[in-house]
Amino acid sequence: MFLQWLSRRLAAYLTKSVTTASVRTCTYEALEKNLQPGDVLLVEGNARISVAIKFITQSTWSHAALYLGPGCGLGDSADGEPNVLIEADLEEGIRRLPLSFYRNTHTRICRPVGLDEKDLALLRAYALRRLGDQYDLKNVFDLARYLWSTPPIPTKHRHKLLTFGSGDPTKTICSTFIAEGFQLLHYPILPIIKTLPSNNPDCEGCTTERFRFRPYRLFTPRDFDASPYFRIIKPTIEENFDYRTIPWLQDE
Image (cartoon, rainbow, N blue to C red):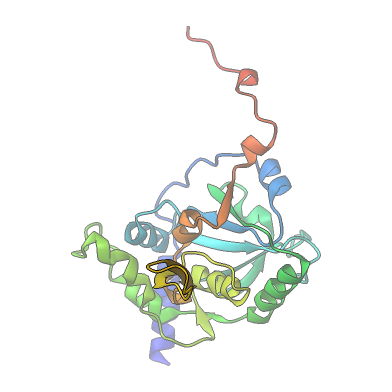
C-alpha cells in the first residue's frame, strides 16, 4: 500500500512540466492531414521524466504514441473529438487521446513501410487489448535516480537504464508497448543482424544474414527515429513545400 502511494506521488512529480515546450515544426493541420494508421508519433516532452529520458537516450524524443486514426474503436474524448492515438502514460497507464492533445508540441512522424490492412487490423487489435494496462512504475523509480544534470553513468550505458523494469507483461512504458506491437507483426525496428555461413555447397566461404528480434523492453522513442525501416514524414515538405513562397521579413 505504501509503495503504491509512493509510486503515485512520484508519477505526479515526474509528469510536472519543468521546461518550455519546443516550437512545433509544422502546422497542426498539416500534421493531422499527413498521419496514417500505424504511424508512430514521437514527442519532445517537457516534463521532468522527459528530461531524464532525453538525457539517457541522448535524443530529442522522450515519448511515443501510436496513431490508429478515427473510427478505430477508441471512441471520442470528453470534448467530442475522435480519439486517434494510444499511448502509455505515466499516471493513467495505456490510454486513448485525440490528436489535439499534442497540438502545440514538437513531433515527428515515423511510418512503417508496406503494412497491409491485415497488419493494421492486428496492430489495432493488439493496442486495444492493452488499454488500461499500467505504466511500469519500477522503471519510473529507476529513471528518478537519473534526474540530476550529470549522473555518473558512461554515455555508452545510458541507453540500458530504460531496460530495468519489472518484467510484468501487463506493465509497460511508451516505446516498449509500441515495439511489442510491431514485433508481433514481425516488423523490424532495430533488429540484431547475424552473419552466418551459407548453406550453399556451391559457394564456399559465402555468408548469409539472419535477423533476430531485440527484446522489446530495450526500445526507446529514439529507436523509431533511428530505424532504417521507418520512413520519416515531414508534413511541411509533404504539403507541396516551395521555399520561394516564404514571406520573409525584410531587413530594415
